Length: 159
Image (cartoon, rainbow, N blue to C red):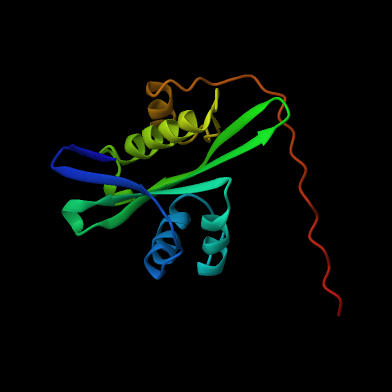
């Protein structure tokens, strides 16, 4: 998928292998999203190899194809439906406002629809106002949920 505008040419594609370039991009981008450690190349290889996970990358063709954003789409079948979740959307701070998030999200929606998903879920912190506005423009709506989370205690290493 190629999106052009504002003097920018953004190409969105599926990551098909865990390259050094992809690992460097995640090392640069994930800290802009979260305090979580970015995945190393081996973890990226496991993610890319998973049939339920699709990593999308956005490249700025006007910058030699530099990766300026990523999005992870997870699809999985449960007894009642095919679930689709968008996770870890991050656009490089220098590329924000140029349609990168829109292009990534539109491609994720296209892929999820093609796979048969009837709904696509995502979460976005209230502090990410621009991202929330984008998601609403794309047709996502906040929903009341009874989402629960269990935090697995870290296991103590044998010593």
